[in-house]
Amino acid sequence: MTADLASYVSLSGKAALVTGGSRGIGRATSALLAMAGAHVVINYVSDDHAARTTLDLVKRAGGDGVLARFDVKDSVSVEKAVSGLVKELGKIDILVNNAGVSRDGLLGRMKDADWNDVLTANLSGAFHLCRAVAKHMIRHRSGRIVNISSTAGEAGNAGQANYSAAKAALIGLTKALARELAPRNILVNSVSPGIIEGGMSDHLTADQLDAIVDHVPLKHTGKPEDVAAAVLFLCSGMADYITGQVIRVNGGLYM
Image (cartoon, helix red, strand yellow):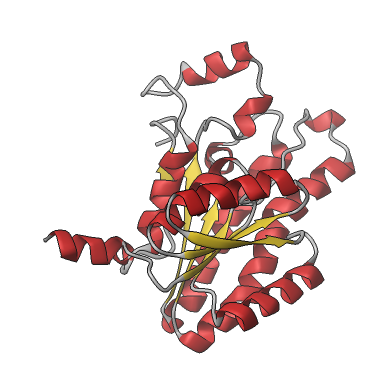
């Protein structure tokens, strides 16, 4: 049974592209997928040091990977980067759309730039990657796409109209693509984190964080590794019959 279980979890021979892989959930996901045997492409946009730290973590975990610096908001850069990666690696089996930003503010004070930046990074960026990667997955008639959404996209957050809208739309994109790509054996799912250490919650004050955690049934924040574990599950053989779903990793904050 041990060998059988290992084969279900193993990603040996798979190539995985993780956007926003230089920190937080992206870093933890890159490391865990590498531990499972995947060759991980760590995407980032600006922080070379943080990206190299993730790559070092991947290699210390016994895995292998490369860095890929490009901006998910730029569709031309995305197409060029994905084409280069496919040429180098032969294929991309797994795409994890994790890159994102937040520009919080009350509705009456939210600037157009803050709205547009968040929608472009969190939603259009994922669309750019899905479009670029899916055509290669279609040729191989196989693939896994995991979009990192948020509890904000399901329940809404005051002061985060842009972020909540983008993450809600990302769930809609997930379900639409799951239906569209299922005939080619490409599974598309979403993981929806709640309050996770080292993520967007870092922008909250201690009092704000305490107030939110008080509403979490488990009474504590999650770790990036908690989200990464859900991503690994969806990318593994254990999730062969799961598509179009939202896996919530939020301690019960939203049910």
